[in-house]
Amino acid sequence: MITMDITLVIQIVNMIVLMFLLNGVLYKPVKKILRERSEKLQGMQGDVAKFEKNAQLRQEEVDAKMAKASAKAKAALDAARAEAQAAGDEKLASIKSEAEAYKEKELAEINTQIGEAQKGLKANLDGFANDMASKILGRGL
Image 1 (cartoon, rainbow, N blue to C red):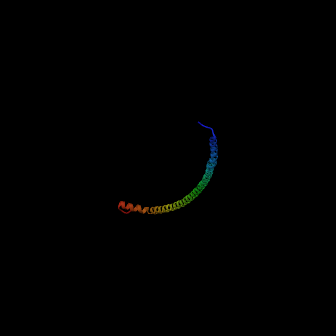
Image 2 (tube, rainbow, N blue to C red):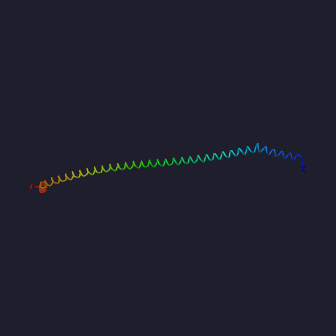
Image 3 (tube, rainbow, N blue to C red):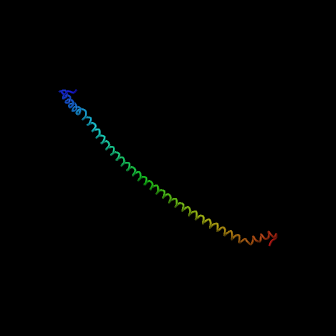
């Protein structure tokens, strides 16, 4: 059986004192440490988010600069290619015109030689005809 005497009151007072002592010595410091740790983690997460945002912005800047530099290099390459093509076309056109002029000159010279040969043959045609006839007939005409 339970008896109600002074020891019960002493035990209740003892529990209340123990509760206040443990709260002051153990629970409050642990809660404070946990709260500080949570605040520190939240601060670090904010810093991490800020650093990630800065890194992303810098990466975008680098990508934009790389794209700009790539476009500039491509434009320079295209311009150089077009310039080389134009120079090549110009050189090819001059070579073709020189070849055409040389061909015309040679054709004119050949036509002149053919004309001279025809004149020479026509001039000697009578002599050739007499020579052929005398050879065929076996006697002079």
